Length: 387
Ligand code: SF4
Image 1 (tube, rainbow, N blue to C red):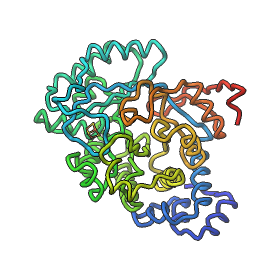
Image 2 (cartoon, rainbow, N blue to C red):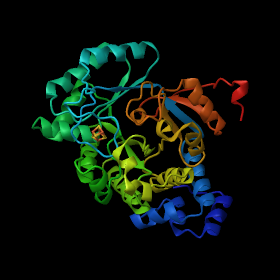
Image 3 (cartoon, rainbow, N blue to C red):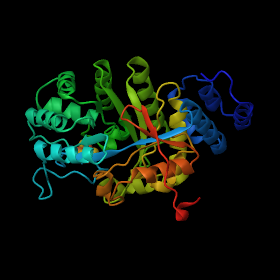
Image 4 (cartoon, protein in one colour):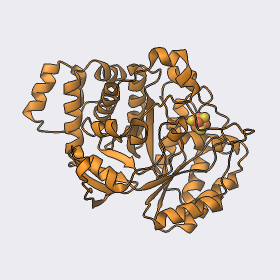
């Protein structure tokens, strides 16, 4: 993979005595057990330095983000995941469904104000007919010119298919025909049955989640994939998740990014549970281990490791950019899901993201949904922002 590894990295790896690290930096694929060892046993200094080196070499020291807006078409959901503060049951006074015409208007205004990507997701709402989704995609595409539509998680595609009596492939093909550009990465949580049966027993099974992504890749829809960590999972659960994602990418390439998302307990049932209080890994070092291990476990398969500042917070997200991540995601104007936990309110301006990237020692670049670099951004340097 890297023919001439720098001497310092070879030495570092030897002093760390981590066979998982040795395999990873030489481009060998790790087993789930080896990935788990990478996460929990590899000395932090070696793990971080190796992941940072690989990220910067792979991405030619270009740190990136896009300008996006977060739209949610409904908060009604009957899947009732224990970690979710966003959804409302159908009979709740807080339940809403936004009409396609209105969302298309918002998308149009956003595009006029420089937004490049619509990131749109919603709950699993059993009352929405298939033509609601058709109108949603076609109205947005008709009202906008260049904006890309990154929408629906594999979870939503699976639910829509089940709810409307279709095959997931049929749903994907129809959505692509109407103008869907890529799949959003949410809904993965931890792709391991052991964890899923506790935190989200009604959710799409991990095998099915991955099958939907594979189907999307096969018909030319690229996709993103997340990992929600920092609750009751153990390193082996994260390792199985990473291994499964890599297996799909090796078989049917099409993942454009991997996005570890820290769980925000806020006002969620999972956050209030004894199990969470007993098991949660809340220290920032764990976040950085997850980022670094993701980079190394997916080396040669997925090039973009995103640090999701919305869930991680600004400072830790910036630190992640020195531990294997290369991208901040986007401006995330109007984010609604994480902010429902009470931990986040507004998006960030492009110059703020560019500054965060520059402070972490990367060249800040604006990119599109598919990680094509568009423009090098000059961060605005305010005196009070100095390192
Ligand atoms: S995470 Fe998604 S599927 Fe689960 S309850 Fe929230 S909106 Fe529904």
